[in-house]
Length: 83
Image (cartoon, rainbow, N blue to C red):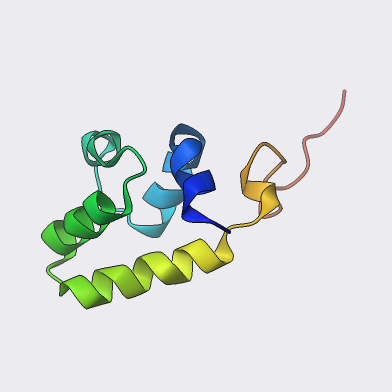
């Protein structure tokens, strides 16, 4: 998945980012606004890791990204029951 797509749909992905990095606040994610360098900086700040570690975490998260992240239901969530 290209980062441009993640950045372009950042608001839809903040929940996934928060699930990955629970120490990041909603304000942090708003400031990041999909910018990879800003995300790395916030991960460094909140988790006390080196830049290369933050970048490695982001790269691993990016590799997990799929079309399901963009509008399709999350496969990890159970299907909604119909009445």
